[in-house]
Length: 137
Image (tube, rainbow, N blue to C red; front, side, top):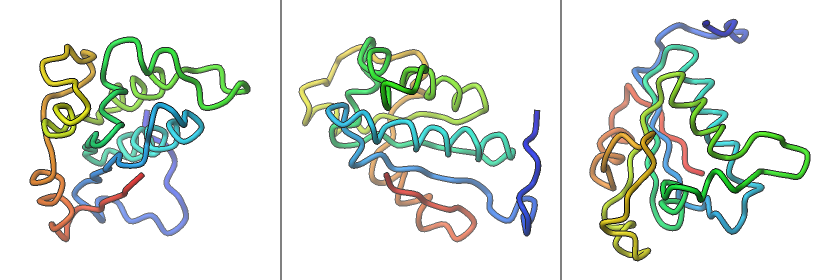
């Protein structure tokens, strides 16, 4: 199902959206739903979406972590639910290998929604491509 276009929306004005999760820390769950809601919205508009997990955000890719977090007591869905919605719409999730190692998670099994590894070079290639848009959370 495609969402209705916003006023002034130009179809395919961008080739995709790259989202970098830098300050999204599992210790601050109130900040965690927003990037995935935006990823799902962009994917629903049929834009390719890539979400890059770096710094402490890589913990969200460890089984059980995002499933145990909610953005607020008033938000029924878990952070994993919002991640899964983004993936169901077509977003792809990438874990930074360096961040995994820095957080002591190298070799740790990751959630099945994770598409693989992608870090600074891949994100910067997207950010430097004028056909793509980049967001940092």
